[in-house]
Image: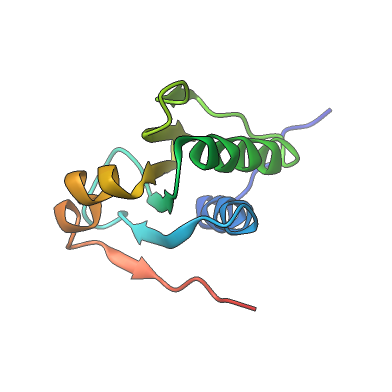
Length: 120
């Protein structure tokens, strides 16, 4: 079976769709291509609880596995307060609300372009 190559922007939007289906809130995609060298996009979203954060992470992994993509690294799943899924060109951050406010990644990466996520 061949390797399927997917543009990193599309990966970010596939992950956003999966997060949205699990009722993630305040979903943001930051385009880091002009401000960072280690990745192209951050997807950041919030959950009401650690259980919901874990469900969002699982849904994203399942959605991306359908496109033959596996996370290079997974961190924080057991605690569920800040789950990081590293897909190299796309890094996904799933926070419970309080943790997201504390770390304020959007503020830290304020020079990054925010991509619009279309709602149905």
